[in-house]
Length: 124
Image (cartoon, rainbow, N blue to C red; front, side):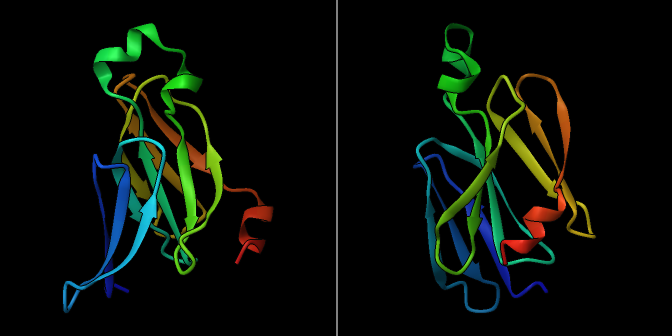
């Protein structure tokens, strides 16, 4: 609805802003640098992506590098889930307009399409 936007940060947070006043409304804290963040077009969810610095990727497993997407409840700032798949930091995220899937792009050279199952839509 274009009333809010989310901004990722290397300080391990993403912030939700009011588009009109530019007031910071919420802060989502992660345990990794956040390179990308998106808002769901149909639910009150925020998806964050990132991971450790690319210089250390070759010496770290994908699990230790924290290269997964994290889903947060927009209102309460609580993490409600995550999706794995990348072997390097995630730098790009985009929701499909119908809100039933999103795409992530990482430094591993892959773009991944993540489709939500029906249980996801019951998390309102």
